[in-house]
Structure formats: C-alpha cells, structure tokens
Image 1 (cartoon, rainbow, N blue to C red):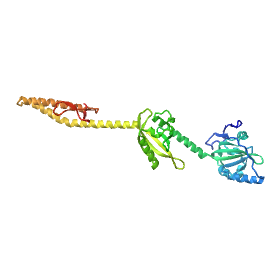
Image 2: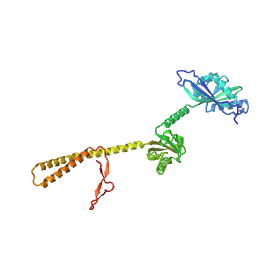
Image 3: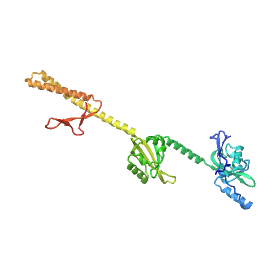
Image 4: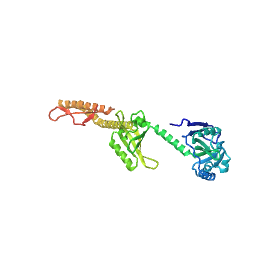
Length: 387
C-alpha cells in the first residue's frame, strides 16, 4: 500500500523579475516529490568522508550547487562553473535565487516540506547564466548533512530535450491534421498508427478502428501489397504507385501509395511508413476529360466530313435541276432525274443532321442476311453514330 503521508505533486508559479533580457516572461517551477527512501549516513572518519565528498562532487555529471538553508551557495563543482559561466569565487558569493529565475524564499519553504518525507525533489525551471542568457533545467534537490543541514541542487540543461519534444508535438499535430493519410506499421505489416485522414478515407469515424489491423486487408489486391512490402524491405527504397482499396462500406477507391522503411535511432528497420492519397475523384475527372476529348475529336471529324461532302451534293442537286429543266427526250430520263433528285435531298438532310450533332452517341445497326431478305443483328462491335 502506498505511504499515506507521501507528499503530492506541487506546482508553483514564480513571477520572474527579469524584464527585457528574458523572452520567456513568467517562469514555472514544478516540484515533484518521489517515493520515500530511507537515508543512509556515510561510513568512515571525518577526513575520509570529506575527501570522498570532494571527489564525488567534482566528478558528478550534473552541475551541482551546495547551499545553506537560506539558499546561500557554499560550494559548487566544475560542471556548474561551465554551465553558469561564473568562477568559483563569484558563485560562492551568490544566492540560489540569483541562479533559478523567479525563485524566492517560498521555494525553499516548499522544498523543506517535501524533503521531510522524500529523498529528493525535482524542480523544472529556467536558470540564469552570467551573460544573462537562460537555459531550461531539471533540478534534483537533496538535503545533506555537512556538519549541519544543507541543500544540494543538481542542475541538468534540458533545452535540447524540450526543443525535441516541441518539435515532436509540432510534427504530430501536422501529421494528425494533414489531409493526406499517414500510417505506420511494424515489419509484419500490422498498423501501429494512423492519422484521422486515413480513417476518413476508409470510412471509419476514428483512427482507433484501424489499430492492429493488417495493412494488407485495406486493399483489394493482398498479393500486390505483399509484393510492395517485400520490395521495400529488400531494397530499402521508397515504393510509389496506385493500388485499389476497399472501404468498410464495400466501395472501392483508387489510392496513391508511397511506402518507405521506418527506422529507429540505430538505423535498423522497424516497420513501414505509408503516405496515402485518395485519387478516385482525380481519376474520374481524368476519365471525363478523356471522354470529352474523344467526343470533341469525333464531332470535329464529322464536321470535316460534312464540309467535304457538301460541295459534291450541291453540284449533284444543280445537275438534276438542269436535267429536269432541259428538254431531254424520253420519259424514263425524267423519271430517273426525279429519283436522283430525291436521293440527293435525302443525302443533304443526313449531312445537315451530322453537322448539328452535339453529343456523340452510337447505336448498333442491322444488316440484311445474304439471300433470305431478312434482317439480323450485325456482328458484335458494329456500331454507327446515332442521329
């Protein structure tokens, strides 16, 4: 059972007294006590303990400050001198409040209360260097006995860590709110992460519905996806192409997929990262554009045919008019001329309809079967323009 007397986490807001030199304004110090541990006093005589303490202090990785109970600095290690840019004499004339931005005696009061029950307390704060610059630090505080109670502050610069965490948060927000789908799978192809856009593409309300799914099940051709995964693992190169996918409602969509190896900090392959874009609308638009272009070309072809055929038709009609008006002998000639004239009118009407076509539509046509006078459907694929 947890210790009922353990202190709970305390959050203290400290108002910085630094004005124009500080870009941070208000400083926040977080005091976080840990689980209780029993203190163990050192062994050996005073001289031996003093030498051991001095060696330990100077070789501690963190910048270390030793203060009295009022916050006055009484000793430091080399690391602290490197961090804070002061020399030893300067630091030993300073107070803890000169180093931790925004701190005051109330901070010490909080530390005393926590250290009554805890082995150490963690503080997150900004520290001030001699040149007025700041660095984010995580500070562990202990109470130690040096012929009397003192406080020991271990300072660690966490600027790079905070910058990395901020960059990760920014990248996560960018990925989570991207319009394109982003998904991460392990080496077995099992999804470990998917952003909201991926969930929308496949018809899910939340990305949690995709967790632990095999990425192969998202696509219509599992074998093709398997080939993609194998290729990426074997070559280490990015694969990019189009794959048909299946939504949860059964509809299919065309997805442009980019797949690349996901690597850890040691460079070892730990899985895949997929970039996914639904290109179904684009492909439908491209198909519509191709159909529109086909109709445009067909209509232009028909217009060109009408243009070239109109001249001989005009000449034919003119000749027939002359044949009827001239005094040709024989009733038969007049009859033929009349039939020819009607045929030319019919041809002219067809040409006119062809010239006014605005939508390209075809229809199957019939043909006469040889020798029986009956009509039957033409061979498959035999189509003509519908007028």
